[in-house]
Length: 408
Image (tube, rainbow, N blue to C red):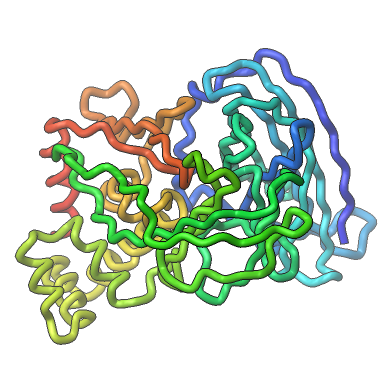
């Protein structure tokens, strides 16, 4: 089915990741495919990067002297001390080739070993390239080895034994959990159900309550040979699996709606409208006898005609789905600070990343007309993807201008 080769190499003094514009990470039009990745630290000297992608996203061509059409993927990775570092700790390249003879719509599922130094916080840049198109997709993964009780020392697998690439599961998803430690004989599971509010506008003062770590229920599951038996998440909420209950660290799985991250239900299309409606408008939509018809009327009244309404609806809810895919942490991506801005303002023109920071710029970098939003990563035991916005009254005018573009 494919030819596999791996090349490990050392790099010296490349440019820092923090100086580059990574806006393509959040622009779905720039990405020809949507690969998925997950990491597992096998022990102190070996870690595994699991990856999967759809071959149907790749270009198949017939080479000279060949009768078959083939596609070639190049997966390369580089492990960095930080976004600001110039030193690459490990790197490698994997080439995979597929033929149409074997079918066009299959998934590639594979892995590559790498070495992550112990007791550190690092970042891995992974690039998947369609060689025939000369197009690539870049992804960044946090790599944490500072504690054996952290989430990357656990791996969730489906009922076929394949790694799970998403921590967001449906009611019917059956899975097991593997621990890297042979000494772990049981996991304590803390179940939480929280009705989290949506993000507040960027100019508002956030007086949110601190998270209450008191679980809604608590139970224990055994491990045999470092692995649990198959199980499922029966209720919506999130489940925190811990080998050491004295600390907050652990491995977390989430149950949102069964179609998540897709927008399919009436609630899915109603609740994100809170960003562009007044309080009175939103309450009227909520109380409507047929909410879906009321939402359609909202878009039609504010757009002026059916064609523009259809365009706005498609654009808005595509952004909601993208926000769910990109920014989900312990709550749905559309509810987060980054999700809110992504939905209302769209993909940023410039994205700069630091070890625990992220900056978005709308407009031309360096221009006095540009708007810059700064985020900081929150130390959260449930996820590495929790970022909080630095709020400022300065954003008020820009926010209402952006909201108004959805309403005319």
